[in-house]
Amino acid sequence: MLTDLHKHLLNDFQRDFPLSVRPYQEIADTLGVTEDEVLAALTDTAVQQYISRIGPVIRPNHIGVSTLVAMAVPEEHLQTVADKISAYPEINHNYEREHRLNLWFVAIASDVEHLNHFINEVERETGYKTLQLPLLNDFFIDLGFKLDLNHA
Amino acid sequence: MDDIDRRLMHATQAGLPLTAEPYQRLAEQLGLSAAEVMARLTAMQDQGIIRRIGAVPNHYQLGYRFNGMSVWDVPDGQIDELGRQVGQLPFVSHCYQRPRHLPEWPYNLFAMVHGKTQTEADSQIAQIADVLGTANRANQVLYSTKILKKTGFRSP
Image (cartoon, rainbow over all chains, first blue to last red; front, side, top):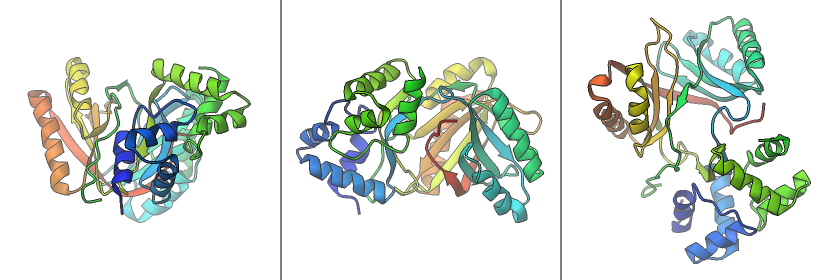
């Protein structure tokens, strides 16, 4: 159950999180509550996984190189292949999607050589070809995402 | 961006510590001062390396169960302008140009949408189609049926 404080914390502080010695105090002052209440509410949203974290969101490809990868895997082998792929530390997202290309993941490595090596390894280990879709252009100006929390 | 910046980014990817002085806590982990941590975060924001600092909501857990990867085939000559317009729609959470792989994959523009219902997601897709107009030569939406792994950024 989300309280009004949770909702403000989720929606109002997706960007411009204070860069000051006591940022939670600053947020508390803005919302008219105490620092302890802010910390407790944020801990609660993290425990309940309403937020994945509070912190800096990095523009893609500023640290290391990454690519989106798609694979077409027969349904009966999908879970096995997906588990194999998710186990790699180079993978940070892995989704099943409704399409002939049904497995979609993001691979990240320190440089292009390591990334290519990793993709080759995935193809060898799983026995399936990959389609590589690296980012060419980022059109998104990330100002956070306005959440509708009326019924959350 | 130097090695200290990279270590700082790595240290923040699990989340800023939920303690009264989180930058001081990070500073202690990295052998820096809190002032230097804040100065480096500010500098990386100014350089565009950091997009934003704040809460990263978990859409799925907040009821946004319809996570659609919409993909579009638009003329390369128009993609910068169209991508910019689509990227500004309030419900779009990522908007990228990616390479085509013909003939199997003709799509070059990717936009992620998040809806609480199928109807809401469909209406978001229709709004993107409106923005693209006749430049939209083909499109598809790939909904996720299962999240198999999702972690924050990790340093390679």
